[in-house]
Length: 156
Image 1 (cartoon, rainbow, N blue to C red):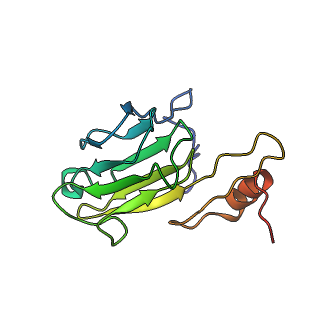
Image 2: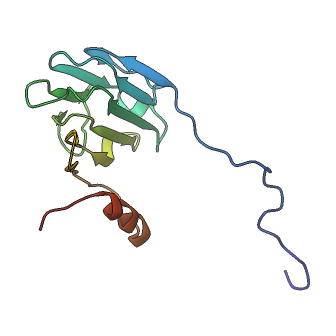
Image 3: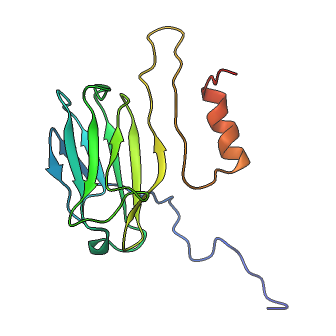
């Protein structure tokens, strides 16, 4: 509008807002509900399955994050993800997590689930720490990749 002053901060709260996810503790095989948004693996003594709710029970864009807080997920203690009542995760019936301290971020399109970003990390060594990451999903901005690269050693 010509002649008017417009400030982008008008009508915004004075304090920053942040999304807080409700933390669901997971210690073994479980079926997550549509209201679950963060599943914390707090005990991983063996392989088990996490079943996501059917994607049509979650609003489009609904998200669930799963994080191994123990570091015990491994090639032996595999976490398998599947979906209630069918549906796919990135075009497959199941997906697995095999790296300690890994996390997986799922997004629903109302029909299927997509791993919109996943960081399947190896546990860093106690000294000379390095980590291996699988990054997929949405494109990362140049600035985000620069910030990530500052913390990672990626062998040539």
